[in-house]
Length: 339
Ligand SMILES: NC(=O)c1ccc[n+]([C@@H]2O[C@H](COP(=O)([O-])OP(=O)(O)OC[C@H]3O[C@@H](n4cnc5c(N)ncnc54)[C@H](OP(=O)(O)O)[C@@H]3O)[C@@H](O)[C@H]2O)c1
Image (cartoon, rainbow, N blue to C red; front, side):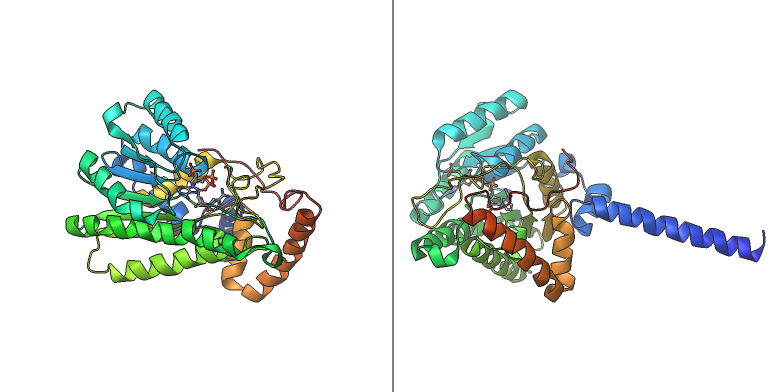
């Protein structure tokens, strides 16, 4: 083979490799550490099956799907949120779709804002199962309102649920994990915990606060390498989050939640959460394109990202002010993957 032909082949291979990488990146729905873990890492089926997992916000959306997938792995479950009837419905479905028995699932009503109840709730879980292997801090509420029109009480409530409630429960469970020198604390943040968008200033603030808190807690737990802290940052995912969001007043509901079907499938988001838990990843981004790409720009070229944020944000505010769902005719993801 001539030297020229060899060089041409080498160049063609390099271009093909770069092309494949580009296709892979365009199709990606998670950050690179997460996708690597999904490909090469420990499988949730091997790692999580015998564990006791406490999930807050288990009555709806991502938390509901999470307990369904966990039940199929054989984990014992504690289902918490405020609506007992919904939790009973979810429990019955878990029993239907898995080999779990009644004794393996505890329905434990819990209001994240009722911090005085968190200690007793933790004791109840320990009484039933003797241990808590994973705490999934998933319960939370979003926001659809402009700061200038929103009561400060809304900000207080969002912080109470998303931040104070979450760290209060973590404070109750952590001593037990420290005593056993093992455990996983998994917290649902959001890409809005690292970036920002209009109409959710309180929500963004609460998720940013969670990041600061749990990153700091992770560094304090350095003496306990078997206690891991995972921050999950999804982009838009199908759930009831918009219809349950806060508005300008604590008691006012969202008028037009819009059609949420263009968002990432809940089952896919949850599968990637399980991969993160099985592999003790510290921070994961779970999102379809173009949100994921947008987020990479946020990390690497924040000033350019602000140009795009303001352009899209303008559209979001216009939609909102004209009574549409804020994300109507916003950009749409390129593809749908399910679990
Ligand atoms: N869907 C998305 O696009 C998205 C993106 C990024 C992050 N997230 C995060 O994912 C988590 C789950 O949200 P989701 O999308 O699944 O929304 P969802 O369908 O509205 O579910 C929210 C869950 O939180 C519970 N909850 C709300 N207030 C509570 C309180 N005071 N005490 C205890 N539980 C409470 C709700 O149950 P009860 O009403 O029964 O209490 C419900 O089970 C949230 O932390 C959210 O911020 C969602």
